[in-house]
Length: 170
Image 1: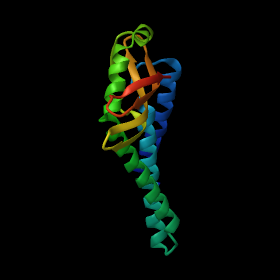
Image 2: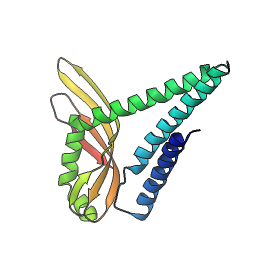
Image 3: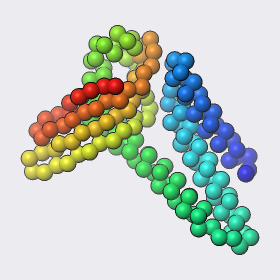
Image 4: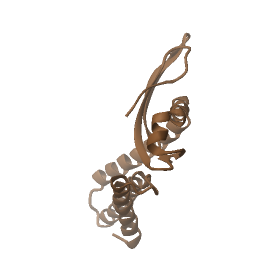
């Protein structure tokens, strides 16, 4: 394992640990670190597997399982990036943010809402026909308030010819 891979893996582990520490002790700086740490960890393992593939290939050993691992990690990273982009640009995410900005109980608990986390996660299911769109969404987001931060899961629904509506926040 070369120095570059060690640095990436170490940074990933440190970011994951820092993310959990932030949430456990309510440190209000860089709550997104655990998500970025996982990504760095995946990238580090990807580089590690690429190095192993090169070594095994140079001595004539089978590299099929390593290639499968590399393909799987690349697939996971690509899906993760695509989903983050899709979720953060969706009407459901916009409706969720607007709801959270207007929610008085969250304002009392967190203080003035200053922003949201960098990487929203979750899932959406939308179907459409000639009568319109319908669907549901579950979005995980970090809310940054002036008093404290909080990670929440927001459940939304959309019926035909209506806008996204928040059903619950956990």
